[in-house]
Length: 55
Image (cartoon, rainbow, N blue to C red; front, side, top):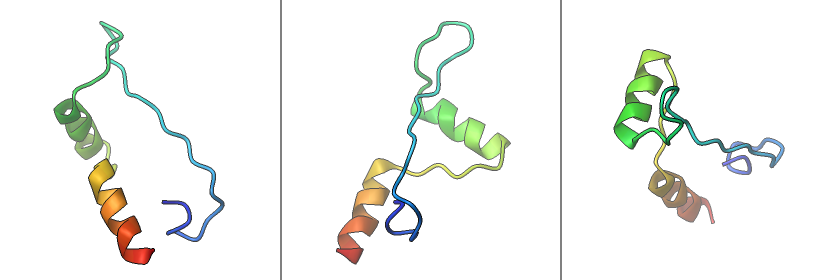
């Protein structure tokens, strides 16, 4: 993604955890969080699809 955006190729990836259980949030929960906070949710398959187009 960084290369496609023509920025320095350093990326951090994090897993979002539930405050109460400490378990990973479901994809649906993450999508709701993203919408609530004005963030973009991107599927890994979408990233790979775009990467294949530029390579």
